[in-house]
Amino acid sequence: MLFYFAYFCSMVKQEAIFNIKSNTEFENLALDVFKFQFKNNPVYRSFCDLLYKHPSDIIRIEDIPFLPIQFFKTHHVVSSLLPPKKIFTSSGTTGSITSKHLVTDVKLYERSYLEGFKHFYNAIEDYVVLALLPSYLERDGSSLVYMANDLILKSKQPESGFYLNNIEDLAKTLNSLEARGQKTLLIGVSFALLDVVEKFQFSLKHTIVMETGGMKGRRKEMIRQELHEILKTGFGVTDIHSEYGMTELLSQAYSKGNGVFECPPWMKVLTRDTEDALTLQKANKTGGINIIDLANLNSCAFVATQDLGKVNDNGWFEIIGRFDNSDIRGCNLMAL
Image (tube, rainbow, N blue to C red; front, side, top):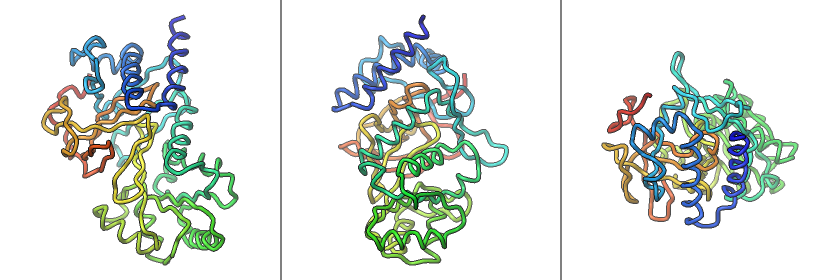
């Protein structure tokens, strides 16, 4: 009986998540989700217990404990008794431990990225979707590939599809779509987009070029400004868009240029002190990135990442770098 009650509560919260209209609604729902996950997520509950944090102590979102992202590598982080329908895994070097996101409700993930894309770019049916994601296609369990594949299908455009190494075909398709003024989304990993502009030159007026980050060991890493300048020149566009997501999240933030990201209404980014992982900072200070992703209803909605960044006064954020290979400083509660 308790299981069905928890399941019912989860379904009610899903509707509320994607209908948030104000910051007050977000904060109230975040506090509600915290209580739900404190009760139904054993890993998160143990973490909160070690911090002596109880729902009675949590009166604002700044009081909520953020689970270090490493827990997704070592534990099953779930807030549901339902078996996982999909397990998304992060990329990693041979022998390294990868993150695993056990998704008990794939429809929730699908709704999150579809609603998120619509929030920033309108309906996916308006676009031809060209996905240049070779490093992700070469392994199983990528949440990005799952999203891109579904966007391709939902676009209902015959030209939509994946590209691996056939960049000549991609170039022909881009030019053909451009000639007829078709709105197009080209989403690709950074090194693959660079491969394209090294061989071809474009002047795209109807295409969004969106990089998902990462050289994945294929090229030397470069700063964002340098990467975007090369891509803008090569594709003939005024701005390079970016997608910010990760295996451990079911939502994405987007940048329409200059590397400044905006969250959908059910997602929020905060920063923590780099020397004290339990202390949040005010806006405009560089710190560790903490994320509230309410779409993570059935796992953990409160995640302390290993990214470094800065949040401005209106809640938009930029990524500056990452912590090094050592654990997050100032928090010794990395393993239960």
